[in-house]
Image (cartoon, rainbow, N blue to C red; front, side):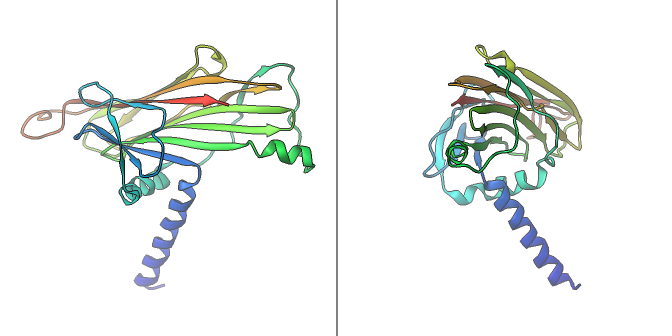
Length: 241
């Protein structure tokens, strides 16, 4: 296989990854230098709070879709492979076994409410924080699930951590945290999937906070070098139904 063919295949593979990653995604770029959070044109501002370097929330503004190409490719190539881990559920009402879906008219109508959307906050160095909102209907029973992930890009910091926290004041079954140490090569961190299985009406507000802490060695903070300690952080609010 010649070099040109290899390059073409690699480009096609990246396009496939990018297309798959865009399905069910909402991506916001945190522009810390300008103090704004970029959202694609034609998209409503999401329920997020992103902290600037001064600790104040960034202001949401729209940007053309092409601005997000790099962020989409970064997510597609750095997102951890999906795991088959068990979802941890709290039952609201009697626990009902989740058998296979029957393709009846009733089941088909229930399944139309299913959704799976991941919200991303991306940062200047390729790091990101995400919260995934999942609704799965099983006829009379519906699961409402949340899962967080964080990725710290390879950078010039010495060490640091990724901290993830999802919580709900009214529905503590969503509550879970994750903490992962990172070195200069970065790394990933994620929470298990936590949620509720409900047989009737269900509503919840889940607050998903993520922080990527980077600690650098001298001469950091001087001569135009990045700060010695930096926190890339934000909060994503997930609502059900």
